[in-house]
Image 1 (cartoon, rainbow, N blue to C red):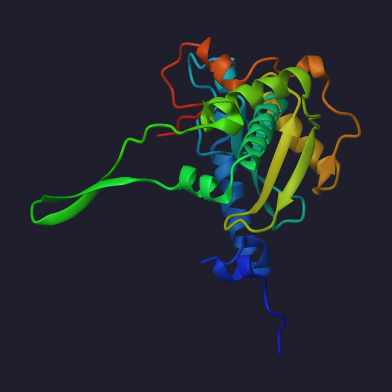
Image 2: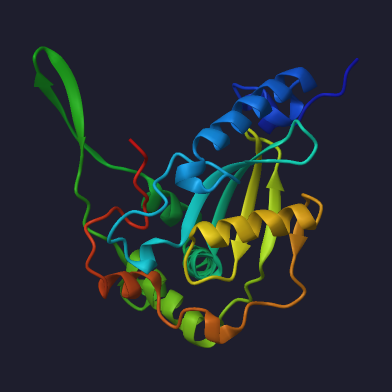
Length: 249
């Protein structure tokens, strides 16, 4: 009897790229190679993407991450990479820590209540029944000193940023469960993600052997934010989706 796969594998409705036969991986590899060649005028010839890299007028704050596809050195591997700055990683980490601390003070019932949506209805329209998401008054808690969950998270995030900044390392982390290519999560010390940074990141990843890697030294504290993401965004006028990127037409 064959070895039973983990639950996550059994729940997926696709075969991860890493488990495809070599011939199928090679076909996708060749197809991507030609796409990279065709997109040389846009991306420079080392990678391609579905996103717009040099969007006119885009502030640096909104250039903290980018998704790219590039080729491995073995003739069959495709890397599906999310490259983002140490700044973005810092904000993600502080937000996660603040959320974990806040939720740890709530009971299981309170946590479930916070995550449970409330609906209004039913209503009838054109003979069909439907519900709408109800506006809910934020709940305050004694354990938060009378603050709501969101207010306490924001307060805690600021305290972590100022007093307990988490160490951030440049790193590469692989994820073999992607449908297209092998996932790569890259953290780089850079003010923004542009073509030069992407090309340098790809070269470095290939140099370390296309594997998991972490720098031995953390990114200097002075190179990381001293305010929260929300506070930073409040200072920039830009009519875009939160740190989102436009797709190529």
